[in-house]
Image (cartoon, rainbow, N blue to C red):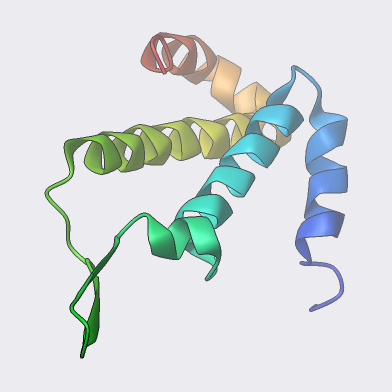
Length: 113
């Protein structure tokens, strides 16, 4: 199971879906990593503040932020991931999605994202 659910293997399947969904999913994956999905300089430095004087250095990290840009990016990314997941399910359950009109609703929901 560990071998089959590695991101490299999953992305191979996603790339086969077509409709450029693979590139979108890949970009969202990379964005979540870049902004803190795994510890990395951008994810840590984006919420870090350093204060100090000649004797002391204090490093603070915001776990909860009021930074409007960070909040908007997180909300937009969450919505885009939701649409991406629906597109992946649509590729697997195409007939069921079409039968209930979900394909068209996904298109409308993703406008502006």
